[in-house]
Length: 322
View 1 (cartoon, rainbow, N blue to C red):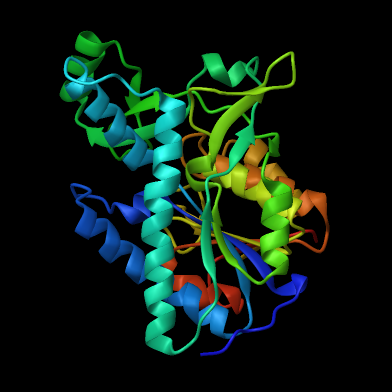
View 2: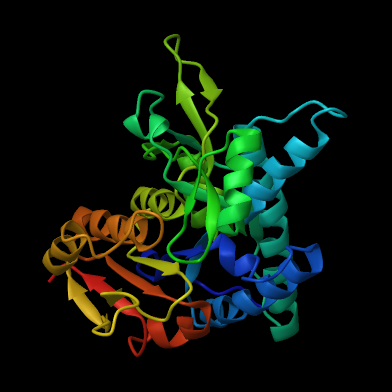
């Protein structure tokens, strides 16, 4: 087995969606998640064989929502675990799944790179207005009747999620910095494939004495991925979602897929309300900020089946400076 040499120009951050790891209609059984991850990392390992180096991030909406539900059901039997700690748990458990699936895919192809999972702490502001305006959907989908019952019985905030059903919503503050960024850079220099920023990372904030303390919320994984990509000077940010391309007028008769848009166009469409806060909105916000940070940067938004074609410019929506 051989190691591939890479340089910074071939460094990409790939953000996998939590909903791709638990597919729609699945219960979220462990074997289902492993099967989905094995399918998803196949193209990633193919790109690795072509000389790319990666940071892989992932969402955790369904997974952390399920853990919260377990909290509720077991509250009378075991101590309740706060949301920030549940975020950390998904960083480890989902990182393990992705790490092992990548390792096995490399073994099958006769190549090898060290892979490691880093549960990254992401700095947020406790006074962020988002803390009192929950926008992050987590957990399973419910019918409207089920949602109304949960609102009445448990006091949860549930809202309709982009036409797919009702879900629980929690606070999602803006990510400011990554505590472990120096360690991440060092491991990249040593050619490690990294899995980090899982579920948007573990939300923490600085106290007045400079110490660090957890915050109970869920950071958007696309915004956290953007911050990671900027911190390590990656040139490409790939956001994996449920559709092959971003579209204007989504779900309407005049729906229009987007192949390539400039930063100015992306900002215009975003401000025009084309991308809802609960679905494509954070992805486009992340894309805008990443390209804005350096004109040499690019963002690709696509689904896992189109990843290889998208990297080659034949699929997906590409957001570039001009």
